[in-house]
Length: 273
Image 1 (cartoon, one colour):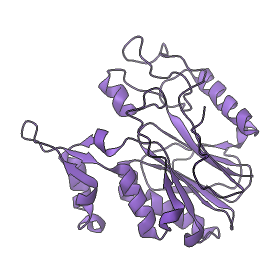
Image 2 (image 1 turned 60 degrees about the horizontal axis):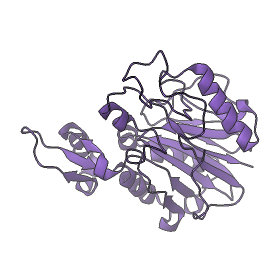
Image 3 (image 1 turned 180 degrees about the horizontal axis):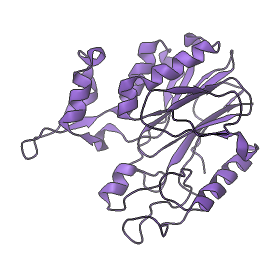
């Protein structure tokens, strides 16, 4: 159900977790989902309710997750992710749906969970101030500053930059993440990335006259954490690719490439004991 984090140095008093797609209730193909029959769109541990999976199976998966963590289901805090840069400060279990791509809290027992299927989950913690954050970073959110938004919200709760630890979870990696010139242009036109944008894009041979690139999204997130001031030794990356490891992770890019349409989502989560 989880990626082993035993080899990573993570602060005490904070619980980090990254789920896989294994050992869950979702079936390969839900009747209401469009796509190739016999595909593996949702199998097995899908934790997202917005992707077309059977809502009861999603609920069963979330219940299984929280039971394993030893916490009630209503302590799981999730938001409607919109590929933006807004951070929600969570002080109690969420009773409504909020649009955000990051959350922070200093309340014990509240699980901050972001769901991903190629985007980067980033889990953040200051163990001294006991402030945590969780970020869903796609390329749009990363460009808009979602990482900095979350870190700034953590500082407002008492965290200090030089104490913050960051864990970068499974995401699509550069060798598999092909993007078009419009994505490169968005970064190139950003004043903040004028000088360094080429560090994150590897040009591909021209295809029918259109230039393509391989984009290093996880590398960009890592760079933004360092640029904000986090110590390099406090930033750790599991270095796993969602696209390549079909047995472990959902991948929206892979599912689309295989003609299955939508797919499930794994979760990056964090909570204070």
